[in-house]
Length: 139
Image (cartoon, rainbow, N blue to C red; front, side):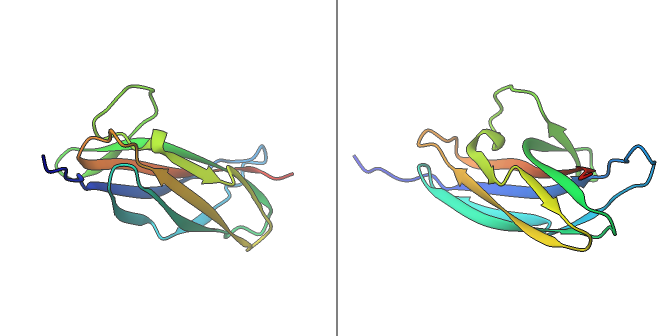
């Protein structure tokens, strides 16, 4: 019997959330690159790096999370899936990020490494996830 490996396509989109401090001033970050389209076989581990830059003149504390997403509508809008349900396209449970919290000074850049551990029993086809950067106050 011939065994074949099933290729799994992994799509990671990065998003950031703007949160306001108690002073009402919005803070911002930039993320690069904004998308990754990766391929892996079941049982493989792949890693990549995301650059995050604090574009604000004040320090920020950035929390990094991973969630699944789906495309909805005819325009390809994205809906984040923060539930713990089992989806055939699920990716978030396979992903770890280091660090999970990043403190950046004014106009400072940092990196976050994400690692995707594709399980041996991974369903073939596309799996979609988002790395989310949520901004909080560093003070």
